[in-house]
Image 1: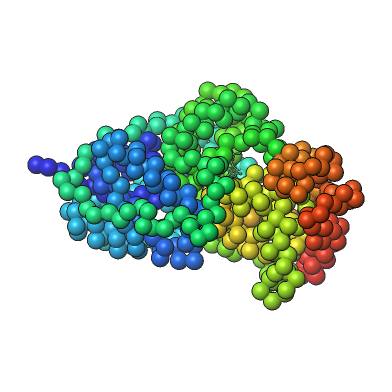
Image 2: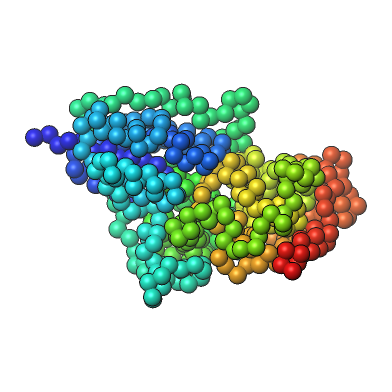
Length: 462
Ligand SMILES: Cc1cc2nc3c(=O)[nH]c(=O)nc-3n(C[C@H](O)[C@H](O)[C@H](O)COP(=O)(O)OP(=O)(O)OC[C@H]3O[C@@H](n4cnc5c(N)ncnc54)[C@H](O)[C@@H]3O)c2cc1C
Protein backbone atom coordinates (compact mmCIF):
# COMPACT_ATOMS: atom_id res chain seq x y z
CA UNK A 1 0.00 0.00 0.00
CA UNK A 2 1.29 3.50 -0.85
CA UNK A 3 1.60 5.66 2.25
CA UNK A 4 -0.53 8.82 2.40
CA UNK A 5 1.26 12.14 1.74
CA UNK A 6 2.58 14.18 4.65
CA UNK A 7 2.53 17.96 4.60
CA UNK A 8 5.48 19.89 5.99
CA UNK A 9 4.30 23.39 6.93
CA UNK A 10 7.26 25.75 6.73
CA UNK A 11 7.54 29.14 8.41
CA UNK A 12 10.83 30.40 9.84
CA UNK A 13 12.56 27.04 9.39
CA UNK A 14 13.52 27.11 5.73
CA UNK A 15 16.11 24.33 5.68
CA UNK A 16 16.44 20.60 5.15
CA UNK A 17 19.16 19.63 7.61
CA UNK A 18 18.39 19.48 11.32
CA UNK A 19 14.73 20.04 10.47
CA UNK A 20 12.69 17.59 12.55
CA UNK A 21 9.42 18.23 10.69
CA UNK A 22 10.98 17.18 7.37
CA UNK A 23 12.67 14.24 9.02
CA UNK A 24 9.48 12.85 10.60
CA UNK A 25 7.37 13.46 7.48
CA UNK A 26 9.92 11.70 5.24
CA UNK A 27 9.78 8.61 7.44
CA UNK A 28 5.99 8.50 7.24
CA UNK A 29 5.35 8.93 3.50
CA UNK A 30 5.69 11.14 0.42
CA UNK A 31 6.36 14.74 1.46
CA UNK A 32 4.61 17.92 0.32
CA UNK A 33 6.56 20.96 1.58
CA UNK A 34 4.32 24.02 1.84
CA UNK A 35 4.98 27.69 2.52
CA UNK A 36 1.95 29.89 3.13
CA UNK A 37 2.34 33.63 2.72
CA UNK A 38 -0.01 34.65 5.51
CA UNK A 39 -0.52 38.35 6.13
CA UNK A 40 -3.74 37.80 8.04
CA UNK A 41 -2.71 35.68 11.03
CA UNK A 42 0.03 38.02 12.28
CA UNK A 43 -2.40 40.95 11.78
CA UNK A 44 -0.50 44.12 12.81
CA UNK A 45 2.72 42.08 12.73
CA UNK A 46 2.69 41.53 8.99
CA UNK A 47 6.28 40.92 7.89
CA UNK A 48 8.18 44.17 7.19
CA UNK A 49 9.57 45.25 3.81
CA UNK A 50 13.18 44.15 4.32
CA UNK A 51 12.09 40.76 5.68
CA UNK A 52 9.83 40.21 2.68
CA UNK A 53 12.77 40.92 0.39
CA UNK A 54 14.90 38.38 2.28
CA UNK A 55 12.07 35.84 2.35
CA UNK A 56 11.85 35.89 -1.44
CA UNK A 57 15.50 34.91 -1.76
CA UNK A 58 15.31 32.38 1.03
CA UNK A 59 12.35 30.60 -0.59
CA UNK A 60 14.13 30.67 -3.93
CA UNK A 61 17.12 28.98 -2.35
CA UNK A 62 14.93 26.36 -0.65
CA UNK A 63 13.31 25.61 -4.02
CA UNK A 64 16.77 24.87 -5.40
CA UNK A 65 17.63 22.65 -2.43
CA UNK A 66 14.37 20.74 -2.78
CA UNK A 67 14.93 20.27 -6.51
CA UNK A 68 18.18 18.46 -5.63
CA UNK A 69 15.97 16.02 -3.74
CA UNK A 70 13.56 15.78 -6.73
CA UNK A 71 11.01 17.60 -4.60
CA UNK A 72 9.15 20.90 -4.86
CA UNK A 73 7.92 23.74 -2.69
CA UNK A 74 4.18 24.40 -2.82
CA UNK A 75 3.45 28.11 -2.39
CA UNK A 76 0.03 29.30 -1.31
CA UNK A 77 -1.26 32.62 -0.05
CA UNK A 78 -3.94 33.24 2.60
CA UNK A 79 -4.81 32.45 6.21
CA UNK A 80 -2.51 29.54 7.05
CA UNK A 81 -5.08 27.47 8.96
CA UNK A 82 -7.59 27.68 6.09
CA UNK A 83 -4.97 27.05 3.41
CA UNK A 84 -3.62 23.97 5.18
CA UNK A 85 -7.09 22.49 5.74
CA UNK A 86 -7.80 23.03 2.06
CA UNK A 87 -4.50 21.37 1.06
CA UNK A 88 -5.18 18.34 3.24
CA UNK A 89 -8.49 17.94 1.45
CA UNK A 90 -6.92 18.35 -2.00
CA UNK A 91 -4.04 15.94 -1.45
CA UNK A 92 -5.41 13.33 0.95
CA UNK A 93 -2.52 14.06 3.30
CA UNK A 94 -3.01 12.51 6.72
CA UNK A 95 -0.71 14.65 8.80
CA UNK A 96 0.76 18.15 8.87
CA UNK A 97 4.24 18.36 10.40
CA UNK A 98 5.73 21.67 11.52
CA UNK A 99 8.37 23.10 13.82
CA UNK A 100 6.92 24.92 16.84
CA UNK A 101 6.93 28.71 16.69
CA UNK A 102 6.36 30.94 19.66
CA UNK A 103 5.09 34.26 18.33
CA UNK A 104 1.67 34.65 20.02
CA UNK A 105 -0.18 34.59 16.68
CA UNK A 106 1.51 31.33 15.64
CA UNK A 107 0.74 29.67 18.94
CA UNK A 108 -2.94 30.52 18.45
CA UNK A 109 -2.86 29.27 14.86
CA UNK A 110 -1.19 26.01 15.92
CA UNK A 111 -3.89 25.47 18.52
CA UNK A 112 -6.67 26.12 16.02
CA UNK A 113 -5.11 23.90 13.36
CA UNK A 114 -4.51 21.09 15.87
CA UNK A 115 -8.26 21.13 16.56
CA UNK A 116 -9.03 20.58 12.88
CA UNK A 117 -6.49 18.04 11.66
CA UNK A 118 -3.58 15.87 12.73
CA UNK A 119 -0.85 18.44 13.42
CA UNK A 120 2.47 17.13 14.73
CA UNK A 121 4.72 19.83 16.17
CA UNK A 122 8.47 19.34 16.52
CA UNK A 123 11.25 21.29 18.24
CA UNK A 124 14.32 22.58 16.54
CA UNK A 125 14.69 26.34 16.01
CA UNK A 126 16.37 26.98 19.35
CA UNK A 127 19.27 25.53 21.28
CA UNK A 128 16.78 24.09 23.76
CA UNK A 129 13.01 24.14 23.35
CA UNK A 130 11.66 27.39 24.88
CA UNK A 131 10.00 26.77 28.23
CA UNK A 132 12.17 23.79 29.11
CA UNK A 133 14.99 25.59 30.95
CA UNK A 134 13.70 26.41 34.41
CA UNK A 135 15.02 27.34 37.84
CA UNK A 136 15.42 24.73 40.58
CA UNK A 137 11.85 25.42 41.65
CA UNK A 138 10.54 24.87 38.13
CA UNK A 139 9.77 28.50 37.27
CA UNK A 140 11.02 30.15 34.07
CA UNK A 141 14.06 32.42 34.23
CA UNK A 142 13.59 36.14 33.77
CA UNK A 143 17.21 37.26 33.96
CA UNK A 144 19.76 36.47 31.26
CA UNK A 145 22.87 35.38 33.20
CA UNK A 146 21.33 32.53 35.24
CA UNK A 147 19.41 31.45 32.13
CA UNK A 148 22.65 31.35 30.13
CA UNK A 149 24.44 29.35 32.86
CA UNK A 150 21.55 26.88 32.97
CA UNK A 151 21.67 26.40 29.18
CA UNK A 152 25.44 25.83 29.22
CA UNK A 153 24.97 23.29 32.01
CA UNK A 154 22.17 21.49 30.16
CA UNK A 155 23.82 21.18 26.75
CA UNK A 156 26.12 18.29 26.10
CA UNK A 157 26.42 18.30 22.29
CA UNK A 158 23.67 17.63 19.78
CA UNK A 159 22.76 14.90 17.32
CA UNK A 160 22.18 16.89 14.17
CA UNK A 161 19.60 15.43 11.81
CA UNK A 162 20.91 14.95 8.27
CA UNK A 163 19.00 16.15 5.20
CA UNK A 164 16.14 13.66 4.75
CA UNK A 165 15.61 11.66 1.59
CA UNK A 166 12.28 12.77 0.21
CA UNK A 167 9.80 10.89 -1.90
CA UNK A 168 7.18 12.74 -3.95
CA UNK A 169 3.40 12.41 -3.93
CA UNK A 170 1.76 10.95 -7.04
CA UNK A 171 0.29 14.36 -7.86
CA UNK A 172 1.62 17.70 -6.82
CA UNK A 173 -0.97 20.27 -5.74
CA UNK A 174 -0.97 23.57 -7.64
CA UNK A 175 1.45 26.23 -6.45
CA UNK A 176 1.62 30.03 -6.77
CA UNK A 177 4.63 31.46 -8.54
CA UNK A 178 7.06 33.13 -6.15
CA UNK A 179 7.50 36.11 -8.49
CA UNK A 180 3.74 36.79 -8.32
CA UNK A 181 3.93 37.44 -4.59
CA UNK A 182 5.63 40.81 -5.16
CA UNK A 183 7.96 40.38 -2.20
CA UNK A 184 10.67 42.34 -4.02
CA UNK A 185 10.36 46.13 -4.20
CA UNK A 186 10.07 47.58 -7.69
CA UNK A 187 8.82 51.16 -7.55
CA UNK A 188 11.22 52.26 -6.21
CA UNK A 189 13.70 49.39 -6.00
CA UNK A 190 15.32 50.21 -2.65
CA UNK A 191 17.02 46.82 -2.28
CA UNK A 192 20.28 47.48 -4.22
CA UNK A 193 22.43 47.69 -1.07
CA UNK A 194 20.82 44.56 0.33
CA UNK A 195 21.54 42.57 -2.82
CA UNK A 196 25.26 43.34 -2.39
CA UNK A 197 25.23 42.46 1.29
CA UNK A 198 23.25 39.19 1.52
CA UNK A 199 23.14 35.78 -0.03
CA UNK A 200 20.18 33.86 1.38
CA UNK A 201 19.88 30.12 1.91
CA UNK A 202 21.29 27.27 3.97
CA UNK A 203 24.40 26.82 1.82
CA UNK A 204 25.26 30.52 2.08
CA UNK A 205 24.69 30.42 5.85
CA UNK A 206 27.08 27.51 6.34
CA UNK A 207 29.68 29.10 4.03
CA UNK A 208 29.46 32.34 5.97
CA UNK A 209 29.84 30.44 9.23
CA UNK A 210 32.91 28.63 7.93
CA UNK A 211 34.55 32.00 7.16
CA UNK A 212 33.54 33.35 10.56
CA UNK A 213 34.94 30.35 12.43
CA UNK A 214 38.40 31.33 11.08
CA UNK A 215 38.25 34.50 13.21
CA UNK A 216 36.02 33.31 16.05
CA UNK A 217 38.96 33.43 18.49
CA UNK A 218 38.85 37.26 18.25
CA UNK A 219 35.06 37.50 18.43
CA UNK A 220 34.90 38.69 22.06
CA UNK A 221 36.68 41.97 21.27
CA UNK A 222 36.07 42.36 17.52
CA UNK A 223 32.31 42.07 17.79
CA UNK A 224 32.25 45.39 19.63
CA UNK A 225 33.96 47.34 16.86
CA UNK A 226 31.68 48.31 13.96
CA UNK A 227 34.64 49.06 11.66
CA UNK A 228 35.67 45.38 11.79
CA UNK A 229 33.77 42.51 10.19
CA UNK A 230 33.95 40.73 13.54
CA UNK A 231 30.53 39.16 14.07
CA UNK A 232 28.93 36.29 12.19
CA UNK A 233 26.17 38.21 10.31
CA UNK A 234 24.09 35.08 10.60
CA UNK A 235 21.05 36.78 12.12
CA UNK A 236 18.75 36.65 9.05
CA UNK A 237 19.87 33.08 8.34
CA UNK A 238 18.96 32.14 11.91
CA UNK A 239 15.75 34.14 11.90
CA UNK A 240 14.47 32.43 8.77
CA UNK A 241 15.76 29.09 10.02
CA UNK A 242 18.06 28.48 7.07
CA UNK A 243 20.43 27.10 9.65
CA UNK A 244 19.67 25.98 13.21
CA UNK A 245 21.62 27.31 16.21
CA UNK A 246 22.33 23.68 17.13
CA UNK A 247 24.15 23.13 13.82
CA UNK A 248 26.37 26.15 14.59
CA UNK A 249 26.95 25.07 18.20
CA UNK A 250 27.95 21.62 17.04
CA UNK A 251 30.51 22.94 14.53
CA UNK A 252 32.32 24.82 17.30
CA UNK A 253 31.68 22.28 20.07
CA UNK A 254 35.40 21.52 20.33
CA UNK A 255 36.62 25.16 20.16
CA UNK A 256 38.00 26.14 23.52
CA UNK A 257 38.54 29.87 22.81
CA UNK A 258 36.81 32.69 24.73
CA UNK A 259 35.48 33.79 21.36
CA UNK A 260 33.65 30.52 20.76
CA UNK A 261 32.14 30.59 24.25
CA UNK A 262 31.02 34.18 23.75
CA UNK A 263 29.47 33.27 20.44
CA UNK A 264 27.50 30.46 22.08
CA UNK A 265 26.38 32.95 24.74
CA UNK A 266 25.06 35.25 21.99
CA UNK A 267 23.11 32.35 20.53
CA UNK A 268 21.67 31.86 24.02
CA UNK A 269 20.46 35.49 23.94
CA UNK A 270 18.25 34.45 21.05
CA UNK A 271 16.82 31.56 23.10
CA UNK A 272 16.43 33.88 26.09
CA UNK A 273 14.38 36.40 24.11
CA UNK A 274 12.08 33.63 22.91
CA UNK A 275 11.68 32.34 26.45
CA UNK A 276 10.63 35.81 27.60
CA UNK A 277 8.01 36.01 24.86
CA UNK A 278 6.70 32.62 25.90
CA UNK A 279 6.23 34.01 29.43
CA UNK A 280 5.01 37.43 28.34
CA UNK A 281 3.45 37.18 24.87
CA UNK A 282 3.13 40.98 24.51
CA UNK A 283 6.73 41.63 25.51
CA UNK A 284 7.53 43.25 22.16
CA UNK A 285 4.58 45.58 22.52
CA UNK A 286 4.10 46.57 26.15
CA UNK A 287 6.67 47.82 28.66
CA UNK A 288 7.16 45.18 31.32
CA UNK A 289 7.73 47.72 34.06
CA UNK A 290 4.86 49.90 35.13
CA UNK A 291 5.10 53.68 35.05
CA UNK A 292 6.64 54.10 31.57
CA UNK A 293 3.46 55.61 30.19
CA UNK A 294 2.74 58.36 27.70
CA UNK A 295 3.63 61.08 30.24
CA UNK A 296 7.31 60.24 29.78
CA UNK A 297 7.46 60.44 26.00
CA UNK A 298 7.32 63.14 23.36
CA UNK A 299 4.64 61.95 20.97
CA UNK A 300 5.46 62.27 17.25
CA UNK A 301 1.74 62.08 16.48
CA UNK A 302 0.89 65.27 18.35
CA UNK A 303 4.25 67.06 18.66
CA UNK A 304 5.69 68.37 15.39
CA UNK A 305 9.23 68.69 16.74
CA UNK A 306 9.14 65.10 17.98
CA UNK A 307 7.90 63.99 14.54
CA UNK A 308 10.82 65.83 12.88
CA UNK A 309 13.27 64.26 15.34
CA UNK A 310 11.91 60.78 14.67
CA UNK A 311 12.28 61.37 10.92
CA UNK A 312 15.87 62.63 11.40
CA UNK A 313 16.68 59.48 13.37
CA UNK A 314 15.13 57.21 10.75
CA UNK A 315 16.99 58.97 7.93
CA UNK A 316 20.36 59.12 9.72
CA UNK A 317 20.43 62.93 9.97
CA UNK A 318 20.73 63.53 13.73
CA UNK A 319 24.18 65.16 13.65
CA UNK A 320 25.56 62.26 15.72
CA UNK A 321 27.83 60.45 13.23
CA UNK A 322 27.71 57.05 14.96
CA UNK A 323 23.91 57.13 15.13
CA UNK A 324 23.61 58.32 11.52
CA UNK A 325 26.06 55.71 10.23
CA UNK A 326 24.04 52.97 11.95
CA UNK A 327 20.70 54.20 10.66
CA UNK A 328 22.07 54.49 7.13
CA UNK A 329 23.64 51.03 7.33
CA UNK A 330 20.22 49.76 8.36
CA UNK A 331 18.49 51.47 5.43
CA UNK A 332 21.08 50.35 2.87
CA UNK A 333 21.72 46.78 3.99
CA UNK A 334 18.79 45.76 6.22
CA UNK A 335 21.20 45.09 9.09
CA UNK A 336 22.98 47.11 11.77
CA UNK A 337 25.97 46.28 13.92
CA UNK A 338 24.90 45.22 17.44
CA UNK A 339 26.86 47.89 19.35
CA UNK A 340 25.46 50.55 17.04
CA UNK A 341 21.92 49.17 17.44
CA UNK A 342 22.33 49.80 21.17
CA UNK A 343 23.66 53.33 20.67
CA UNK A 344 21.03 54.31 18.08
CA UNK A 345 18.19 52.81 20.12
CA UNK A 346 19.33 54.51 23.30
CA UNK A 347 19.60 57.84 21.44
CA UNK A 348 15.98 57.59 20.26
CA UNK A 349 14.60 56.64 23.64
CA UNK A 350 16.68 58.86 25.88
CA UNK A 351 18.12 61.81 23.95
CA UNK A 352 14.98 62.21 21.85
CA UNK A 353 12.57 60.93 24.54
CA UNK A 354 10.55 58.97 21.99
CA UNK A 355 8.73 55.80 23.05
CA UNK A 356 10.83 52.71 22.21
CA UNK A 357 7.90 51.21 20.31
CA UNK A 358 8.42 53.75 17.50
CA UNK A 359 11.97 52.43 17.17
CA UNK A 360 10.92 48.83 17.47
CA UNK A 361 8.46 49.25 14.64
CA UNK A 362 11.01 51.03 12.39
CA UNK A 363 13.44 48.16 12.98
CA UNK A 364 10.61 45.68 12.33
CA UNK A 365 10.13 47.15 8.87
CA UNK A 366 13.78 47.71 7.92
CA UNK A 367 15.78 44.79 9.41
CA UNK A 368 16.23 41.60 7.40
CA UNK A 369 16.57 39.82 10.76
CA UNK A 370 13.48 41.53 12.30
CA UNK A 371 12.39 39.10 14.97
CA UNK A 372 9.42 39.58 17.30
CA UNK A 373 11.25 38.22 20.35
CA UNK A 374 14.79 39.50 19.77
CA UNK A 375 13.73 42.95 18.65
CA UNK A 376 11.27 43.50 21.48
CA UNK A 377 13.58 42.11 24.15
CA UNK A 378 16.49 44.28 23.07
CA UNK A 379 14.40 47.45 22.81
CA UNK A 380 13.05 46.85 26.31
CA UNK A 381 16.58 46.20 27.54
CA UNK A 382 17.95 49.43 26.04
CA UNK A 383 14.99 51.43 27.36
CA UNK A 384 15.19 50.06 30.86
CA UNK A 385 11.52 49.08 30.70
CA UNK A 386 12.07 45.30 30.67
CA UNK A 387 12.57 42.47 33.15
CA UNK A 388 16.22 43.22 33.92
CA UNK A 389 17.84 45.79 36.12
CA UNK A 390 19.10 48.01 33.29
CA UNK A 391 17.80 51.46 34.18
CA UNK A 392 16.27 54.26 32.13
CA UNK A 393 18.51 56.72 33.99
CA UNK A 394 21.70 55.05 32.71
CA UNK A 395 22.21 57.13 29.59
CA UNK A 396 24.74 56.10 26.93
CA UNK A 397 27.01 58.85 25.59
CA UNK A 398 27.01 58.24 21.81
CA UNK A 399 30.10 60.33 21.07
CA UNK A 400 32.36 58.63 23.57
CA UNK A 401 31.00 55.21 22.58
CA UNK A 402 31.97 56.06 19.00
CA UNK A 403 35.57 56.77 20.01
CA UNK A 404 35.79 53.90 22.48
CA UNK A 405 34.74 51.35 19.86
CA UNK A 406 36.85 52.89 17.05
CA UNK A 407 33.92 53.59 14.75
CA UNK A 408 35.84 56.01 12.47
CA UNK A 409 36.09 53.81 9.36
CA UNK A 410 32.48 52.70 9.81
CA UNK A 411 31.28 56.31 9.91
CA UNK A 412 33.38 57.30 6.89
CA UNK A 413 31.88 54.39 4.97
CA UNK A 414 28.22 55.03 5.73
CA UNK A 415 28.22 58.84 6.00
CA UNK A 416 29.94 60.06 2.83
CA UNK A 417 29.67 63.73 3.96
CA UNK A 418 32.26 62.79 6.62
CA UNK A 419 34.54 60.60 4.50
CA UNK A 420 37.37 63.15 4.48
CA UNK A 421 37.47 63.58 8.25
CA UNK A 422 40.13 61.71 10.21
CA UNK A 423 39.87 60.49 13.78
CA UNK A 424 39.12 62.03 16.22
CA UNK A 425 37.23 64.74 14.24
CA UNK A 426 34.91 62.28 12.53
CA UNK A 427 33.28 61.26 15.83
CA UNK A 428 32.06 64.79 16.58
CA UNK A 429 32.78 67.25 13.74
CA UNK A 430 30.60 69.94 15.26
CA UNK A 431 32.57 70.01 18.51
CA UNK A 432 35.86 70.15 16.54
CA UNK A 433 34.59 73.05 14.40
CA UNK A 434 34.81 71.09 11.12
CA UNK A 435 31.18 70.37 10.26
CA UNK A 436 31.16 69.76 6.50
CA UNK A 437 28.54 71.32 4.25
CA UNK A 438 25.52 69.06 3.89
CA UNK A 439 25.92 67.32 7.25
CA UNK A 440 23.52 68.51 9.99
CA UNK A 441 24.43 69.98 13.37
CA UNK A 442 23.24 67.92 16.33
CA UNK A 443 19.46 67.97 16.68
CA UNK A 444 19.96 68.10 20.43
CA UNK A 445 23.13 68.50 22.51
CA UNK A 446 24.28 65.50 24.52
CA UNK A 447 24.04 67.26 27.88
CA UNK A 448 20.72 68.87 27.01
CA UNK A 449 19.25 65.52 25.87
CA UNK A 450 20.49 63.78 28.96
CA UNK A 451 19.10 66.41 31.32
CA UNK A 452 15.75 66.49 29.54
CA UNK A 453 15.47 62.68 29.84
CA UNK A 454 16.37 62.70 33.53
CA UNK A 455 13.96 65.54 34.27
CA UNK A 456 11.12 63.77 32.43
CA UNK A 457 11.85 60.59 34.35
CA UNK A 458 11.91 62.42 37.68
CA UNK A 459 8.63 64.12 36.82
CA UNK A 460 6.77 60.84 36.31
CA UNK A 461 8.44 59.10 39.21
CA UNK A 462 7.77 62.04 41.56
C1 LIG B 1 17.61 47.60 19.69
C2 LIG B 1 18.03 46.23 19.19
C3 LIG B 1 17.19 45.52 18.35
C4 LIG B 1 17.56 44.23 17.90
N1 LIG B 1 16.71 43.55 17.06
C5 LIG B 1 17.05 42.30 16.65
C6 LIG B 1 16.19 41.57 15.78
O1 LIG B 1 15.11 42.01 15.39
N2 LIG B 1 16.61 40.32 15.37
C7 LIG B 1 17.80 39.78 15.79
O2 LIG B 1 18.13 38.66 15.38
N3 LIG B 1 18.60 40.45 16.64
C8 LIG B 1 18.28 41.69 17.07
N4 LIG B 1 19.13 42.36 17.92
C9 LIG B 1 20.30 41.66 18.48
C10 LIG B 1 21.62 41.80 17.73
O3 LIG B 1 21.88 43.15 17.45
C11 LIG B 1 21.67 41.01 16.44
O4 LIG B 1 21.25 39.68 16.65
C12 LIG B 1 23.11 40.95 15.89
O5 LIG B 1 23.56 42.28 15.66
C13 LIG B 1 23.13 40.18 14.60
O6 LIG B 1 24.40 40.21 14.04
P1 LIG B 1 25.28 38.90 13.96
O7 LIG B 1 24.49 37.82 13.32
O8 LIG B 1 26.57 39.28 13.32
O9 LIG B 1 25.48 38.57 15.49
P2 LIG B 1 26.58 37.68 16.23
O10 LIG B 1 27.28 38.58 17.18
O11 LIG B 1 27.40 36.92 15.27
O12 LIG B 1 25.70 36.70 17.11
C14 LIG B 1 25.26 35.42 16.63
C15 LIG B 1 23.77 35.30 16.73
O13 LIG B 1 23.35 35.36 18.09
C16 LIG B 1 22.07 36.00 18.16
N5 LIG B 1 22.21 37.23 18.95
C17 LIG B 1 23.32 37.98 19.13
N6 LIG B 1 23.06 39.01 19.97
C18 LIG B 1 21.75 38.92 20.30
C19 LIG B 1 20.89 39.69 21.13
N7 LIG B 1 21.32 40.76 21.80
N8 LIG B 1 19.60 39.30 21.23
C20 LIG B 1 19.13 38.22 20.58
N9 LIG B 1 19.90 37.44 19.78
C21 LIG B 1 21.20 37.79 19.65
C22 LIG B 1 21.66 36.36 16.73
O14 LIG B 1 20.85 35.32 16.24
C23 LIG B 1 23.02 36.40 16.02
O15 LIG B 1 22.92 36.15 14.64
C24 LIG B 1 18.78 43.67 18.35
C25 LIG B 1 19.62 44.40 19.20
C26 LIG B 1 19.26 45.67 19.61
C27 LIG B 1 20.17 46.43 20.54
